[in-house]
Amino acid sequence: MSGTPTVPGDTSRRFDRHLEGASPVARYPQVPSAPHTQVRPSSVVGRHDPRYPDLVSRGINARFTPDPDTVRVVATAEQAVQAVRDSVRDGTRLAVRSGGHCFESLVDDPAVTTVIDVSEMRSVYFDEELNAFSVDSGATLGTMYRSLYLGWGVTVPAGRCPEVGVGGHIAGGGGGALSRTYGLSVDHLHGVEVVVVDSGGRARLVRATREPSDPHRDLWWAHTGGGAGSFGLVTRYLFRSPGTDAGSRLPDPGRLLPRPPGSVLRKTVRWNWDSVDETAFCTLVRNFGAWHERHAAPGDPGARLDNSLALPRTGGGPLTLEMAVDATRPDAEELTDLFIRGVSQGVGARPEVSVTTLPWLAATLVPDEFAGMKGRFKSKAAFLRTGWSERQARMVYQRLTDTADYHNPAATVYLLSHGGEVNRPGPADTAMAHRDAVLKTYWSVFWFDEREDALHLDWIRACYAEFFGDAGGVPDPRRGYGGAFVNYADADLTDPDLNRSGVPWHHLYFRDNYAALRRVKERWDPDDVFRHALSVRRSGDGSAPGISRSGTPGRTGSSDPPAS
Image 1 (tube, helix red, strand yellow):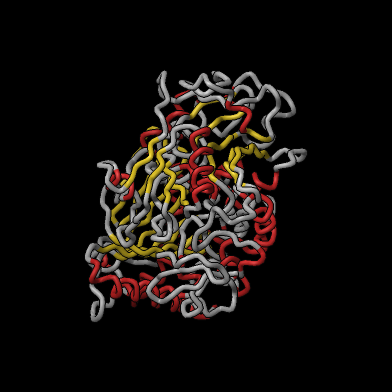
Image 2 (cartoon, one colour; image 1 turned 120 degrees about the horizontal axis):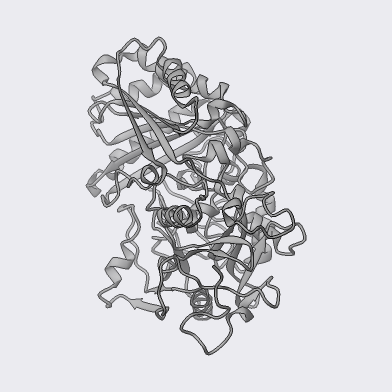
């Protein structure tokens, strides 16, 4: 299905004049995933508008209270260009919101005076001109999954939470349940269209692709793991798997992206805390890590499994091992049974096992358990090249079972499978440098009462610091760890009181790719229009923001006010 070369509802001018990197016939098609005939105008919502509270409260973390002067709700790329142009002209500090799932205050920053909300840009369609699938940056992962699968039987291997917005998720690398089988989202990213601002303050739309001859290829590369909010405003992503075009257009779009399984086999294994002592706990988590060390290589049959191990504090539910695999594989039962035996060997405690088989789309669109529950939280994460050590396992057990000083049952540590096809590309092939990890570990604490902020923040920070106590309190790649994931934003890594490793925050997130990301920043955002506490810096801006123990990051070496 191809689109018209003009913006629907706008006959006053051709939009392609704004698009750099386009051929004379390649214009920006606006073909929606759901039929409509009229694109509504851009909305400028101020403090006294009744829509303002809804728009400024879209962020999921109640720790942060945004206070922008205006929210610009845009529905087309042309409107996005105009919104950026107006912000630059007026000298306002801008931020862009897609799904609102940022863990930190990168958008909900009191220094931000204009928020550009792209959630009304949510079309998903096949662009015949570009021979690629187009996904607007305001679409949610659930919208993308549903549209691609029902329309063409394909998918992009992306995150597990269908409510998350595409805009920031893809720019940070993307990835989820199918990534050990098909790689990360960005491994299938053919192109990106971005509103950028040049040194003269001119906002324009640029298309950048992975084609070696594309003069804008560096901008595409920066969006394959460099994170959102550093280079420009993404209006849409273009997806086509490498090697599927072969220099010519294929008649069947269903051959251009991975096909997910028709159904998913899920098994869940639960151990009640009252049946697990310290020895059993350490055996369980060390078995989980050892199994993933053995089965992290691309092509390993075990890499077809997507696995997680949830370790809540006592009182927060059972220890839960989950796995999912293509139910149509003839060895699906064998793979899952071998995995369960390998992880539970020597644990001793008898678990409860449940088995379900669901159609793929139904399994994928299950809402996140915290969807609609807005509270205060703090999360911390790391890539791991090996499983937990005995010291780390015992330390986590003590932290999860100690009730003398901390009683929150809504604190959980996770181990998440990684590797497989994720580790096939080299670390510099995309901006996502973490191509050697076997696991991610993820810490999360959730609460409601603002008066308890210090209690919960101190607990999770102390846990993380002790876990990485042999590396200065952070997952230092020089000490055998894998660094951090920019999509799990954690401003603590910029704080010298919390990051005592001597390794700058950007090396944890981007490793050796940071120098190249800075060059992209200097070329495409020379005036630092797009910035936040964890954005890529220009060469003269210093390597890190200042940050206080209260969690308030600022920008050293600049005149920006502190962020929250």
